[in-house]
Length: 397
Image (cartoon, rainbow, N blue to C red; front, side):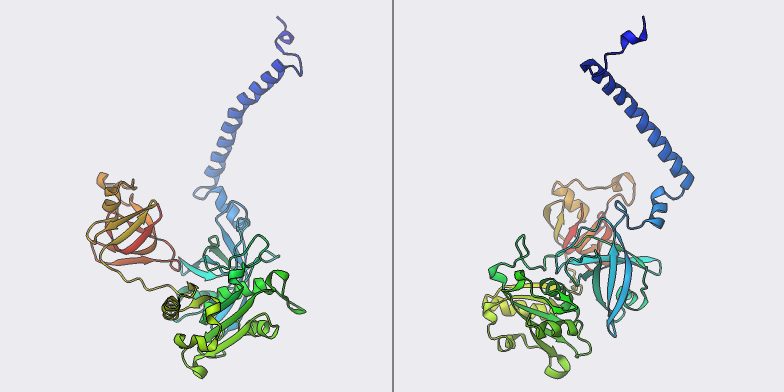
């Protein structure tokens, strides 16, 4: 029988089915061929992977670990600088007031720190953070004094709730149009990001877009001395343009800010929504003051809070909150609550129970040593089979 008799007429239903079957049959062959090519390339590049070589030539490409290249380091004060970064293709953007966690390799060890973004979305796609070098700060001193143009850093996506509410057009709701910003030291950085977005600066001066016309903003900015005041020129320019009313307070001139006297500085304090960022002591005083008066307040702490370790606490894992005492391991407490935890301990497989501690503190029951994590330090891997809650702790699982 002629093979032509076995070939369905072109364009017929039978013909289309035959073509589809041929494609389906070829699919597995193509996949096997691709798998063989991949294995061949991986063998040729061992011990590295092909992606490792791509990282050398295109580290900011889509699909790679999120990184950024330092474009410039711009001094702000003697111990502070703005780091301008070109983020990788997978950077998802941010809302003014949010922060980004940056991973920096110092002496062969990768350290993560969180820094507020100091601007709104930029047309050039760049991002920037302003870092103040703190005494004995390994990462901050490295970024301010030793980072050079072209340096690669690791990034995470922007996060944080210290943002102004806005509709789809960027217009602030009426309830947040009379604002008070209280900032201290480098706590001004997220606020500057908000203000730059609300009132862009150009060569012709500060602009007041229609979406910002109805805003009435007072900024109480505190610094040890005027030379130590980060972004003072920006704040003064906004004040001169009538975009904000600036009340600058310097410890060496005015003394330490008395929160209880804030109403004297800002007579219409009761009519404003307050956003505050600065050291923990200032924020605690503001929280007590505003709570007593029933005033709205949103805060952001720019330095890591001191974790006070206790005996036991609430373990947050897999969407559950589990109360655990100081003598029960996180692993046992979670499993007793019905959480399926990774573990090979009982089969003699060590390190199978390791999970990232995102926030809080745990105590090593063998040594008594406390491990603490927060947004500044980044997640810390812990062994849940030997660690007990030392206060509230949040695990990534």
